[in-house]
Length: 424
Image (tube, rainbow, N blue to C red; front, side, top):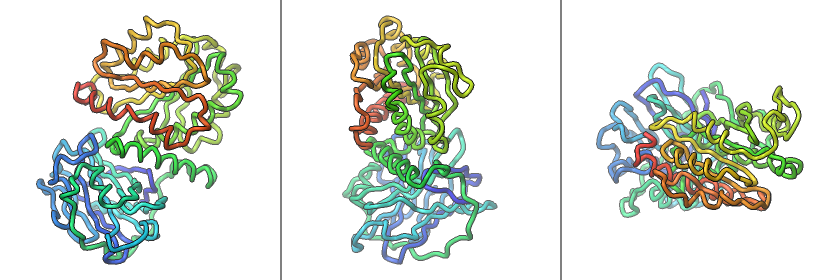
């Protein structure tokens, strides 16, 4: 079985052997980090490397310069992710991209080997190859392939290890015989053109960088997209601004949602739940479902009206939430404002503050956003569960800036929500 970058798969055995191949001896150092929900180690004992080849509990062991042994039964419950990484030795110039055959294999007893080739690297000198993580009581593996230009220093800092405790140069990865070719898992966006897949991959990488900066790279979340379909949005639909919004939200779902699915709604007086969007449908989904009026894809767009009424769509999303759910929800709410039911909306936002969802409102259309600018300061909430920013010209904003603004508050909310036991 092969997992391409961004793909994930189930693990059925608690005993794993993880082997890195494709690098010359003395080129890279292999290491692992035991991480909690906030993407950080509990302490230096969670960093497994040359000078500390085994975790305290024995769940992670460095057995050779190119191999790790994992016993998932011995991993403590507060550790939710094991990040497996490599860094270029300080004596080696250039980036990891120069090691074209770099790959990592996961072996399970009685199961086919999972091959995770490393792809998409450019200037990085350290990279998290894969993550072994808990999901709904089971273990899964994800091909990550994202890293840091600054190499080992940046890698360990991002995971909460003091630079003073960084490893000495370690025995490096030895060449290994490549495993037999196996059937590849579905590739996110594999039906798209090469150019569009490259854009999608670069955007997903920018999302990952933002989450790394916020120590939330291991977070998994349901992603909900809400799009304003009121008459005042006509220009945004006619100029296909809304289409481009959707294209740039898909990488967020690919990074956060375990299935890479974007749950999407249109709203006006009422709302429509559109079919879920995946990367493979990016060429056809916007043209099929992004409309202001008429019947499209078997849906009557006129039935939900053309004026503003936010409480129904907010209430619908609240209906899907359960206090203490271990999987948080990120709501990305794009609108040109016009919120008139101030009393009802503020009451719903206060109610929502005790539920596991963060609401990121984004203003589009150079409008008067009114109430939206005040929700972030609303009193009487359990935690701050709302963010807002104006995005009047999405085409003028880089991916790095867009995702930094879009995801900047979500990790902070998640930590507060876990402290308040809103998210388990």
